[in-house]
Image (tube, rainbow, N blue to C red):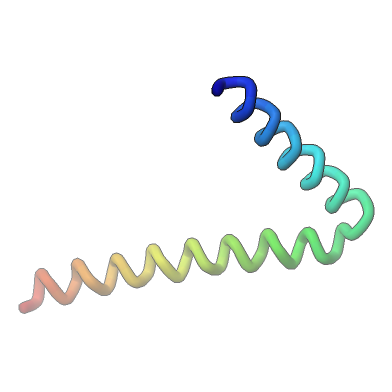
Length: 55
């Protein structure tokens, strides 16, 4: 089962490299979108704990 995981990770890495080389602007936009999504989640968790503390 380890070899399946290793092959899957390798394919994802190769695809990401291919995408960055062939379409760098689109790859940058995808990374910016992912970072924005993570940041939005962090802000939501922060608001949650803030509202818990003030309630």
